[in-house]
Image (cartoon, rainbow, N blue to C red; front, side, top):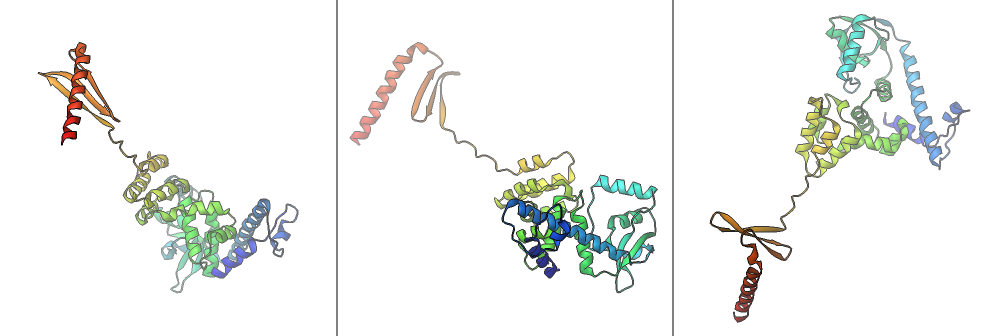
Length: 327
């Protein structure tokens, strides 16, 4: 798969597309695109190529024998199952409970006489829940590498695919593609580099947060993930894990609230002064404040003696200064 991805990335960088001869552009020799429109057309060409490859791979399935096979002998391959929200899963289950299967699931033969599921994991799981022992299926003789591509691109272009699931697909693809850069990966799958870069914001989340998110990946988008990743790098890992946990388990807890919960708390302002109270019996006689080099005396009782007390304070300060000079 590594060679295939490198080939896709190299070719897709240098393909230009026009409305009149899109197919010819797909097979054209390399031409460097120097402008933003040219680069956009390259990405469009690459996306079209991947859709064409999906169609080509699907034609391979026509050679398979369609029949009902026992679901007890079907096995899920990690990474190939598209995660659905609870609502989507419930809708699919209700549909399958009432109507016959329109599209057969796609299997690949194993050495032990059983099958791995290439496409249709959710349908197989639901049939099991409904107590149905067999499901309409096709066994394909495509290579495991081809099956992986088909599952990847079929899921990638699914409208309901969450940002986190895209990240998981990109991560797996990048890991098996000979250290393919994000730019090369973006070009190969037909998406903008900025979009792919945004998706990789999940890469910086704590492992515990990712594990929690696996159960409901649709709850956290890439934009919010970027904020949580930043908080993690700044040392607020515990808060990030708690925010993801609440997102997954509390329906009313929003991404906006999750981001706010991990933001750094503003430092408490240090007091700029203090207030001293002088009592006469149980009454406050006066308040003395000191702020930014200013001393103030506010009389609560005997306000008419303000000038007298001002002179007393003056005399006290002068005497203190004299003592310092003598010492």
